[in-house]
Image (tube, rainbow, N blue to C red; front, side):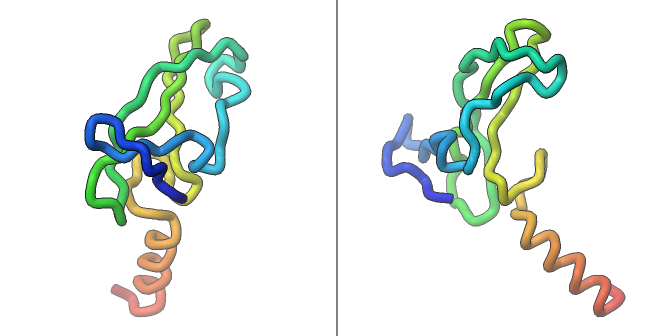
Length: 96
């Protein structure tokens, strides 16, 4: 994942293409293809010293908000998947 060199209000801007994803094809809730850009939201991720601006979309049919995230992170989790996997493997191996 590369952070684009452009800055928006002093916060690094992470374009949706850098996430390994592009605009969603349909709404995950109602499967409508009527998605509109819904601005950006700041998100904190481990490994970055400042919040990143992440692209959001809104379904015009049901109102669902879709937030794009890096493929390396689970939804609602700041730590990367690999870090979580490593911590769980360590706990299983050591019993603590």
